[in-house]
Amino acid sequence: QVQLVESGGGLVQAGGSLRLSCAASSSIFSLLSMGWYRRAPGKQRELVAIITSGGNLNYADSVKGRFTISRDNAKKMAYLQMNSLKPDDTAVYYCNARVGSSYAPGDNWGQGTQVTVSS
Image 1 (tube, rainbow, N blue to C red):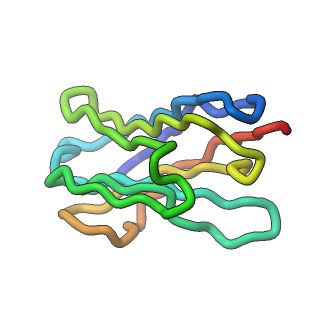
Image 2: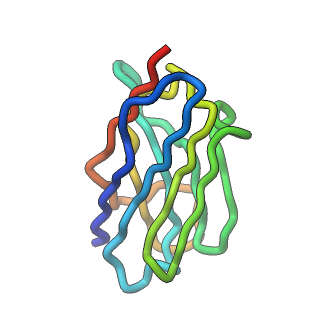
């Protein structure tokens, strides 16, 4: 079981930026694929971005060119840099982890961090 703690959410105006962080408690962090998902009010949780243990990236079409996922294996951290934010990006953002190189979500979830983008 991997413990995940997100931080960095908040309120920002449209066009602004935020950086989300996910701290993982795992001795095998480098072997984990890390993902960011979000759930907007009244909608299902959806993929935002994934970085696999091998460094491969996958983004939702809606965030391509605006969001960047990255990781620091030495610090056991994953990040989501969000630029040019839009009101439609308003959601609770969740960090996810799974063992191995995969684009599929794992069973390990953080508690979520709220991102609110005002128009």
